Amino acid sequence: MAPRQQYALANPVDPKDLVAVQRFAKTLTVAGRRFGTTLTVDRVEGQFFWHAWVSVLDTAFKPIPKKNWDKAELGAAHDVARILVMGLGQPCADNFIYDDRTFQIRRPLTIKKREWHSYRPIGQTRLQPDS
Image (cartoon, rainbow, N blue to C red; front, side, top):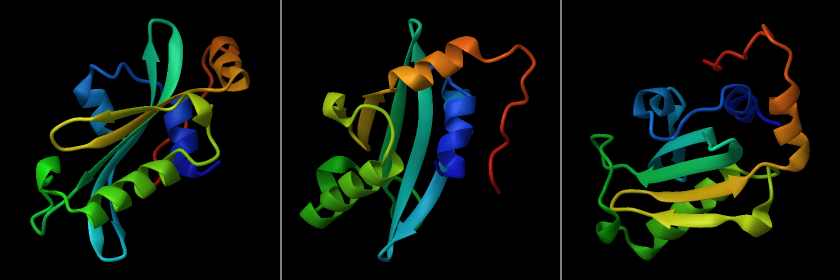
C-alpha cells in the first residue's frame, strides 16, 4: 500500500467536512496534464469507503469545468482516479460520481480493512502525511 493510501486509511473523514477532506488534496502531473486529486477513506454511518476525486486543472491550477473536458482529459481523469484506488477495496462495487468539476470513484473497503478500523487500539499513533 502506498504512503498516501496508508495515510487515508489511518485517518478516516466525514466527507461533508470539507476542511478535513482538503488535508488529503494533492496536485499531480501526468503526461503534461495537471490534476487536482484527493484520496480519503470516508466514514458514513459506520461504513467505510475509499473515495478518489480527480479534477483537470488549467495553467493557473484552477479546476476546469467538466463540460469543457475533451475526451483525452476525461479518459486521463478516469485513469488517475483508478490509479489512486488501485489494489484497494472492492472494485466490483465502484460508484462513479460526476459533478461539475470532478470525476470521483467511491469504493467500499474490504472486510479486513473495516475490521482494522473497528479494532484499532485506543491511542495508536496516526500516520502523518508524506511531504
